Image 1 (spheres, rainbow, N blue to C red):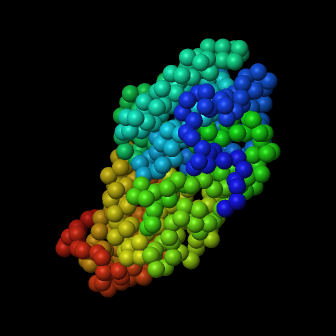
Image 2: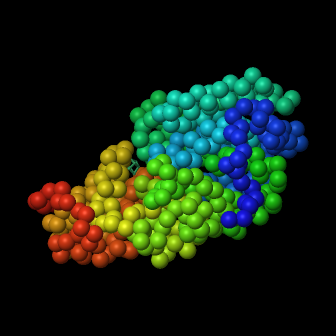
Image 3: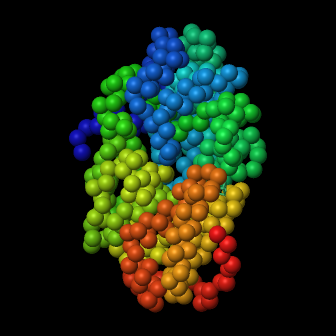
Length: 439
Ligand code: SF4
């Protein structure tokens, strides 16, 4: 792939920029200085709007709109949360950005806080990697000592304090309303919206939650300008996107690649040096644990929000996973659904009960005791769960099953006829549960 303009990650040869001096040598913090000394908050938002930046956390909301909403909120103080908690722990995105370039994250947070008028920020991340937490803590300390955080930054009136919050609470830890509850010290349960966090968030004050990768784009946009930023990516989704690629031929933890939005799945796999042909692979999963399947015939699909949605999947956790040739899609969907049923916060019935019913029905089919009516039941639940769920977790939880049934219907038929198409499924149980169907 030719050189990519507006990259977030340095090339493999470049050293990590953990120390503030190293980061400044590469032009770090000049965007913040420029914003604080030459621009108004409204001008920063205008530049982000001109860039067309979309949130990288999954939904692809326009970042400028989110910043504007928070900037317009009348209540004070306002809070900014950097969501650096990868819901799918296999993702390499947050940990790589934080480990290689923590000051880029801090600078992005400072720019967003300035744009919307927040004076306090929370850097929210997984706490499982103690060395990574220490790296981030050290970078925050250095930024404070060197005056790029704190009072009167670059001689301006702007002030910002950042608190590091590390937790390890499973998939739901990355959900926006859940993380606000967690920072407040409450149980990790998603909340009904509206009211939205930009009106009523942390400590009942306006709060903007932005994904770590989204924030890392802000220094680039301010220093190069929104129009220059638009030269990479697509018209609707400018810029680049990071993806964790997992699969045959790759290191066990996978590899991180950065490609312009609109790059096909196939090219991205090539960039990652992942093998994805018929001799080794059966399908590709896009989006992580809640993502959907793409058959190999559809690998030309562009990596962008809308085309992926049309294909039945999501950007989600930005993981591209190559499934081996002998994967039975009934068993695969069952395992994903069983995992998701465990991770549901349990607050609303469609998700708490529905995902379990999907997993249980799939378990019956993969065990060779499925009946034709099970497919209709799965179809029904694949609407009921997303339509009735309170948060994005439930909205996305049926993707594995829906795409498995859409693209690999023969696997389901084979199981209903008493055989596993790849000969890999072992019966998990031998009897059907009798459950009253109440939908
Ligand atoms: S959709 Fe699932 S995760 Fe979200 S609030 Fe409902 S039960 Fe919790």
